Length: 528
Ligand SMILES: O=P(O)(O)OC[C@H]1O[C@H](O)[C@H](O)[C@@H](O)[C@@H]1O
Image 1 (tube, rainbow, N blue to C red):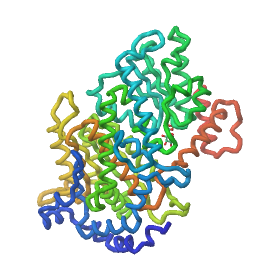
Image 2: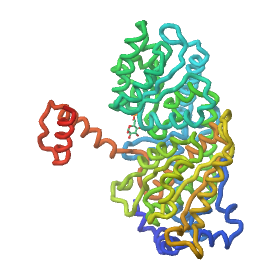
Image 3: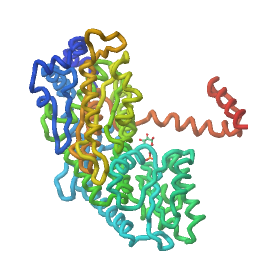
């Protein structure tokens, strides 16, 4: 893979780096009254406004030239058509196939489409039977609670969606359990009647320590509390790509909902991993979520690069993170319903693109993924916005707003929206003028994107999430890295397994570094 820095297109952009950094965003508006129209893109009720970035038309052309030089469109097509683009794991990457409506033309082959439709139908039948109380728990009581046990990609997506659309929930109440410390599981078990609870064990690998530990606990609870021999068969359901290990846990693999190896964990909420969404909101809402994502997929596949929302969002990110060295990025949704968004995007963007070697294994020549963080507005305004306005580092912000709240939600988002727009304006304009002390002045010229959803509903949420998935793809394509493996995550897991017996006191801490040995000694001392 040619290093990005060796391409003439990047070199041209880089030679203008200082001018771009100094570019007054306000001056771009002064020069071009139509700038908002030209630097915003709308796809089916989702608007991206990237006009408050230091990007002139000429710079946009340079960015697009970089995208062409990196063959972003060809790389995209290779993903969509099921080529094995995840080279380090020799896998195709087909989360987009999960969102093709039944019978509609997709990009990948027909076998995959049939498999997707079959799993989706099975999920819908089962969810309907549970929601309509035909399929009950082992003692004949209806299922009113679901405990979703999973972590990372087997947790964050369904959690985000169910929190976002909670007012639409008309099915069993879903409780999420990810952490291994037992806190969430204890809370969930305390809130649930075991005879009316379905436990979902969601794990692509079915080997993740946290998930397996919580699954054992939850299954023991069911066995203890439900007087029926077939309680596990009736009230525990596995969602996994590793059916063999389902048997090892004492469950019937024939009852499990399958995942495929061509779906990455952080891209999996559209698969059977989203079963809790279907249970809570119903199959129609799940379909709407998929439809919204598919609309974004079609747009990503078909729109010219310059009016392609994920392409432009990805290029803006590369400009900020790599060209201008802005190593962190804030995401601030202006609705409490999207409070999980920054956590979701942390996994999506940082696990995908927190890489320092390219697809050939050679060191990349420039910085890749920036740190992603944030919380909802307006509470975030009263916490970290001071640093956004006056800190020494420029932190690009993605604002996310909704024109209409989720159906059934009380409260008017008008007030919130005023704050959202004002913050983007304030970051750009700054505050200057006679009579202001240095402490009172705000430098301004700080970039932001605004994403505005016509309404917070399943369809737009699907589009929003798919947009960020494709943004990660575009960034990775430009950087020349593989967005679909995550070997870095493995290291700590292995070390934790080695340390556990030492911390427990069964093994002597021989050969450890001084810090780890010291921490273990102190922990053991304090634990008593
Ligand atoms: O679904 P599982 O196999 O249990 O994996 C859960 C999570 O494990 C790891 O942390 C991976 O890095 C994530 O990508 C994955 O989503």
